[in-house]
Length: 453
Image (cartoon, rainbow, N blue to C red; front, side):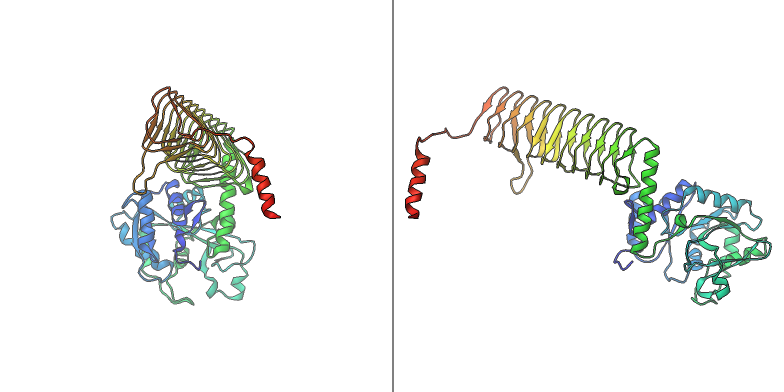
């Protein structure tokens, strides 16, 4: 990957590759999951512990990188208490498109097989450096030959090893310790177990599409697989009743909680993290939502950016609104053009339609925040709260110097700097009295013209 980050920590649709593997195993019904780690073990383990809880995913440390067989051998101590009758499924950590249904079927095929082993094969559209499946005249799998060890005749075989296996734990215990490194790579090949299985009737083989099982080895693979994952995610939401104005440009993370039917997603929308959206909402072009909940019938106008926020039913947000963490906008409220919020609760029916900053604030129901209003919440050391009570009217270009409270139904005149609480139904003004000097402009122009002569 040419990266300082372990390959399995690179992301597809907002999920690290290792998490895709774990989620696939869980969805397939895995009772116990062991992650075999080597490079950057602590970092990868940290990601797993943060998501699933400490110790929920067992960790096996492969101290030396001596091949797939050695990797599985490193994991056997983690299964020491399991009976020989259990089925072990072996997945790679870099194939996020593998379907859980395929994994469940693979485990079932192993259980039913006389050899107690099953594997996935594939037929790539073009030749790749995968192991080839060598069969006898009756179609029984005899062995898997790795690309580095294959003859020219074997390299012509189209059926290739996908790299996913299911095997009886007792058989695995007996045979993985017998693997040798007598091959071109000097490694312990897990694929050699297929030759052992041939003496028991042959491993069961299930053909899988290449675009489902393909792994990631570089940035090109990552981009290609990400595009496929995004298409799969988008199509799944379409089947749930969600409309896309331009699906190829819409990015939805794999862990999005919900999108209700009759919601429309505009071109270039990004839904990230644990975002959820209700029914009948319209998320217009270019909007980016991260860990945000949006209720039914909300309208997010173009290029709205929302993070760790909560939007109520029927709200109108944007265009070009930035809701920073801990913003809550209640039903029917409006937050408009170039308004920025942070740790602010905007209650039902309130409006902040233009060019304002509302930080560490509580905006009461049906209050009106005029254009250019700023809550001055930071004194250089601490943050302070501004409270605007229900029905209050804040005139344009006002500064509310926190901590301060604007009482219910009070008015703040345009251009006012509020430094102390405003009582209920009062008018706050801090402007100097306006003075008009008649004829001054004409005299000023004449003076300037004479100066230029």
